[in-house]
Image 1: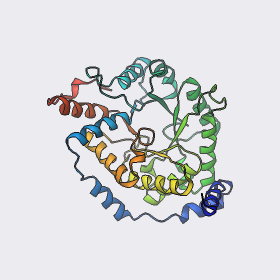
Image 2: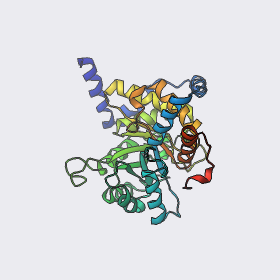
Image 3: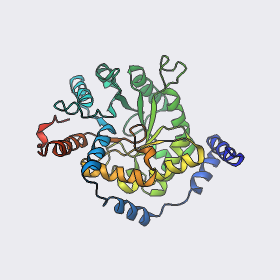
Image 4: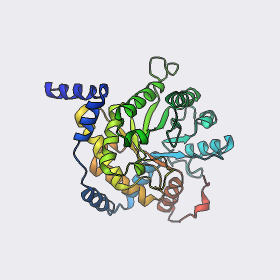
Length: 329
């Protein structure tokens, strides 16, 4: 490591100490070429993946799914059934991989934990007054700690978009730092277990510009986020290819500057195998194979899994199963 690199990393670590320093850094990031980003995303979306490569892509996409239910009508029975599906997405085919995680509200975490314990499937929970993020910090911290104590090993938090859009970057930064601390630590914060990973939801549909998406991505990473996530799925505009491209470029540049790798999770509106493969192509072309792993890229989805399973069955058997062949989530 060169002295210049060490100095640059040290400078970045100091940014959170000052509102002025954060503002200067975030507004000093290169602007996003809107036309270029949208054209690049559209171009990557036309790539065709066939036969063996397609089968591999489908299995990888299944492993990257955060199987999600975030409804007011969720019940213990419903989330237990979802967790069982996460473990065996296709009960008729034991070669089908399990998903990356199950994502539920904090109150549902104990029921999912019963099913997933020891399986290797992660248990994610939304927190911090999801989806609005409009609650006092004390409430958000309590929300996070409750989910972690109940067994969640991943927390999906939402940033305060009102504070971010008003330019109160220090407030947003400090909140992410506090939530990260509430996720626990390897030295006893989770009774000796590793800290829960923190996914920071930017709610890109409310950020209005790609420049804001880039700034919010860097802010979340500087504050310690392990993943940056596009959306809650609760606003009309959720994940898009151009927005995800901007976020992928941000994590690429962040690793180059700091040496720390951060994951990306597009969520909301990704429903088909064709959609998922477009995202995988974009990941490979933008940040490379290091991110083509469930540890570094996830899909926040519910209906996507069934389409992946239908396409997988078609490739392996030659027969296309209808949508009612698999359980509805």
